[in-house]
Amino acid sequence: MGGVTPSKFVPAMAPSAETGGRRESGVRLHCPDMMPLSSDPLSAPPPPLGDFDHAVLEAGVDQILGLFRRLHDEGALPPVLSMVTPGTIASQIALQAPAAPEPLRTILGDIESIIVPGITQWHHPNFFAYFANSSSVPSLLGEFVTSGLNANAMLWVTSPAATELEQRVMEWLWTAMGLPNAQDWFGIITDTASMSTLLGIAAAREAAGYDIRRKGMAGRSDVPVLRVYCSEHTHSSIDKACITLGIGTDNVVKIPVDDAFAMRVDALEAAMAADRAAGMRPLAVVATVGATSTSSIDPVPAIADLCARDRVWLHVDAAYAGVMGIAPEFRWVLDGVDRADSVVTNPHKWLFTTMDCSAFWTRHQDVLRRAFSLVAEYLVTARDSQVVNYMDYGVQLGRRFRALKLWMVMRAFGTDGLAARLREHCLLARDFAARVDVDPSWTLSAPVPFSLVCFRYAPAGMSDAEADARNAEILTALNAAGHVYLSHTRLHGRYVLRLAIGNILTMREHVDLAWSELQRVAVPPAPDLLVADQPAK
Ligand SMILES: Cc1ncc(COP(=O)(O)O)c(C=O)c1O
Image (cartoon, rainbow, N blue to C red):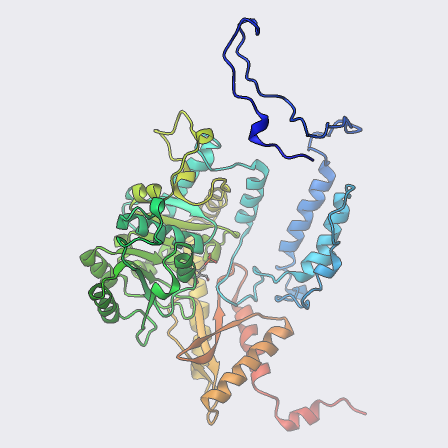
């Protein structure tokens, strides 16, 4: 098919006597080298649900509920970690899309037989790896309604409810976390903490005032090297944001941590002073509440003092643990967060909200808008001066209606219900940590402020290097068995296991199972037991 080039179009013409006084656009309906469209109408008018009927919709809904229900069925829990080998799924999928339509029932059948075996079950009660991406029935319904509405929250006018609910729910969450003055904070929901942090650092860059948005940074003698500071335990999303924004990973300064894996403020202060002395510009500090490896908490109040004194943007990454502020006895973990310039927490991690949902706030709505607003003519609306158009505050134009599921979660559980579940997870983690602590063969590797336990198998007489290798073997064997799923990290260079509790289905018996599985794979049975276990000949 021929391409359409601008030269094929003729500009609009003024009215003339030849056109009988009508204004002619001069735009030809067809480009000369376009193929004519054949007229091949559908054989029948589509039924009310587009091309598909109610029965198949109901079958699909039943199937989704079935996926959820089987995770409640203690007798027949599926493996938590997908057991397929690389390429298994791809080999079952046709190399090209079908030309002819296929029945939806066939496709739903393939979901069961091909796709589900390749799914690692993130909301399985025995999922203890990374941090949870938790879900819940209200959130599942919220996603379904979102899909049913298919709203695009890019402009207020493209779905006023999507924008106004997002604004209100972001105020709800801020206040629920025990943080003050929600009205002074601008909230926006993004897909991930990685994107939220990108927005925070982009706003910091805009606030610095070098007009980088327009002029870029390359070849400019008036822009110093910009530096971003975070602890050596900060999530990799900080580096990724700095890669994307042209700051460069060499300018992400990793500040050492103390014994509790929290950023050392003295080291931060020294690093910023040294950089200034060298002609560089401290742009932003990222403090973490609930760091990925250990869930450690950086000293936000002291970092906020430093940032205020030196006029440096403070971004708080509370992706995992920020929601803990919903439980009043944990509010202290967010001390100083209201003095930050931007903050992120992820309801899709530990607030029972289906992927994806990341909550980002800034005190500087104007700066964020300056960083990103770009209004093409076709996006101008008559309401622009009265409303928030969320497309002005980020990279995306089209935006999912994520606020709906968060609203449903917050209403269906209530903040008391959410706090009770979060608290329970912390209690389960403390109990697990206590077991590790009293067992001479195991050792705790970090404090347990929330629901993450870092630990390792280290019986007397085993060297550190041997223990590294043994713990890696334990993790492989444990996960291969498929009953529970844990992950690992390295602390002070040593290989450490992580058990993170965050799933709404996880109860004491699941944590017990994790402990007994760990014992089973770590501690080989005594030789006499092996003999006794042999089947009788
Ligand atoms: C502290 C912290 N920040 C950021 C992230 C990135 O989250 P996302 O996957 O939403 O980008 C994680 C992920 O685990 C995290 O633990």
